[in-house]
Length: 135
Image (cartoon, rainbow, N blue to C red):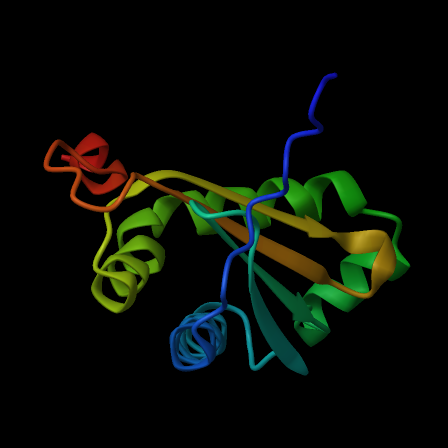
């Protein structure tokens, strides 16, 4: 008889996800303007995903009206990846774990819905982090 694998249950640390959300709001406010909302979720034991709503600035909304979605996405990706250290440092500080990978995207068709994803190394990992790739 085969046994079906049991899903891994991750107990979300409410304080941790709230602090990550607050840090992402702070960063967005500095770089893009204050988002309408931010929600952080564990996506398994080693990944955090942050969803931010209504992140477009007035100028970016004008770009959307002009149909400049590709140019706007390119601009956002450039800014977000030029600030990898600023985005990853708070996640490492709050979780106590090193970031393995950082992925960032914005859907300009859906009023600036943005997603920041942080894949974390296993607890206790003592090697380099995503921040070391920036040096």
